[in-house]
Length: 298
Image (tube, rainbow, N blue to C red; front, side, top):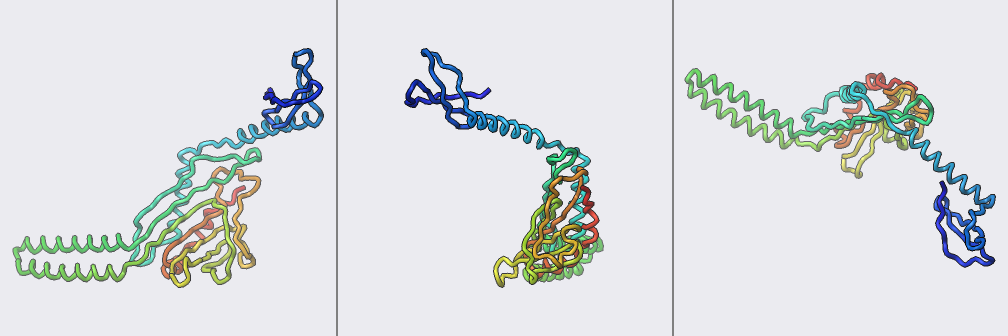
């Protein structure tokens, strides 16, 4: 029911004016013998009220149509395995680096598209951080285990001369290891992988690190001469089929949605850190393995 709020304004000839709360239009009606008659709506006013009602109904219908449905445990597990497969395809980190942190952003809901029986592609991502600190710690731990083992063997034999020699050798090794760790310290590398992320950027011909059918990698430096920056690797066998003819990357979600709940359409891998370490790593990516994950089911 449309509600009206009366406005107190001076209208001649016994007319009164009210404001419609739903569409903010002013309506006039007569007062007869002190009793208010129903509002007299003109054609224009009736159109405004009708449009307001239709708009509200459409909004409610749209809200109901976009209600998400939860993904089940098996679907989430299958999606996570695909993210792990992206990490596997990226391969081992550069020498001296070790994984220091890992995090997953997994999907939990599936949204229907505006077309019956189809869905919006589900998005998910994961990240890892690689550094040289843990690699140095691991080296020290191995050195410590080696020291303890040799000392225990010498003690079991009662060979105190050997124990003294082992202690001296280990001190020298520890010093050398610490010096090497200081020299080998490098800036960390952040790595993020994602599925069904729809984005893009302009292709600078001088920024292309890797390019083949369905794949293109573009780099950008944070500051000129800093040696630090990021490289984004885009995977889309359809949009990037002939990437050498494109001036921009544009990975788009299909307007009509996808028929398969778990459809994978695109993949993006992003590196951030020292470019001297990242660029050779990008060129070692197993692109075929990643493209195989993209089923393109629509």
